[in-house]
Image (cartoon, rainbow, N blue to C red):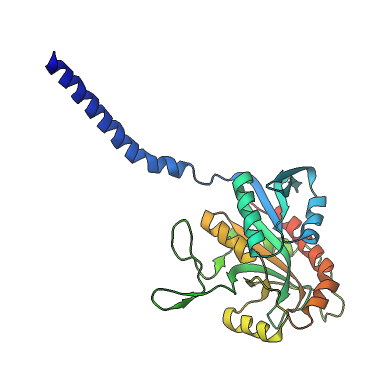
Length: 285
């Protein structure tokens, strides 16, 4: 009798060991199965009201969702399902809204748009910059190896991110093709019609209005435009492996006249931006 009990205990122990081994093998795969699974919807984000309301007004079958106090509007543009939201100004607000839109709506791609200051001396208000890459211009620290770096760190993998976050190539191609079909409004006092450039956009938590800072951004980053949200959005999308593109419509030249120019011209710049976004949506995969 005692022998039979020992045999049963042994069989239970062996069975438990097998179950534990299977659990150890399959838990990582289960975790991987819970990774980001995109849905057939595109997120369209902008920093403030003027940048997103024209897009919202163009939605067919619009529906409003308020999540964590933020208003998201879903609907269709050119037959494509989209979710539109205003992030608020600055990197923290932009990152927060981007994180929420990824968590709740799981978009297959993110398009961030709005106005910016031009830092490329060849550009003028009214021009459009399609960001081939974005970077934080106000981020930097000294590594343990006593080296200065502009690279942020991925909190999930603990790896360093690239200094420049690359745009999704398919989205960038769609934007370039769409730009050929849009008639952009010219801004008064400019010397030519608006042009479209594929270039570099840099982000910082400061409204740049200084010739010295413009020269610095052009020298250090070869930045074509500067704004306050883009790199925060692209960093989150990069870390979550979600395709992303930033487009900026220039309202000023980020110089000492920037504030006055922005207040005077931002509505035209925002309209140009919104019209391009709607044209792009129809060409996205």
